[in-house]
Image (cartoon, rainbow over all chains, first blue to last red; front, top):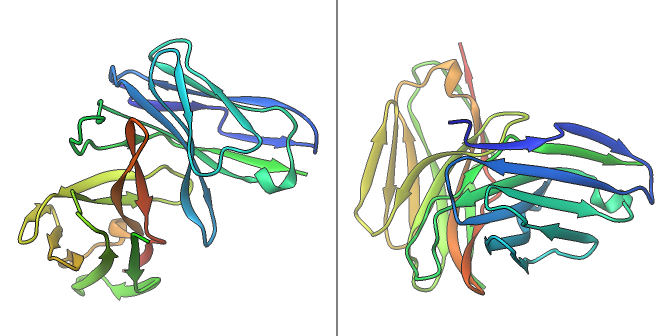
Length: 116
Length: 112
């Protein structure tokens, strides 16, 4: 099993450009998440999905959109990139946890994004 | 506000020199605490989940423990390959799911 994979590994954008980050998991996990990691801020949740066709906002959703058209894929889009979106983006997945069970989140290798 | 605080921020040890990393938390109704390892340029790698005070888990040279106020990651006779940033996190309820709330991490360097 590859676990959680992310594409691309690294990208440089100019302010105003758009791009999509792709996350794929082969563990048949119901839930998927997008986090960003910044120095001094730790990991923060951007958006998440509790199943195919559903998405919800996390704590820092502004400037991002997401889609979950297939259970195994979760896409993060930046419509008009800003320098403040320079960060490392991590995707994670887990089993269903709405009932209160504590489920481990498994992370991908990350995408480094630089917005000039 | 629920939060976790990790100390120290950075720790340098000689190979074979045992030590402990601390994760203090103020979380009402803690339902679990996670430890992850993160290598430079990589994603967090799951190590342990602890569910209740008094619980301990071990993996190779690492042992994680949990009390009502803090968790420790003990590293015994470390090797250079144990160098990494170690993160602790707790699950927080969000609508229909849980998110992980992470500490800032401890950057551990093991010198040969």
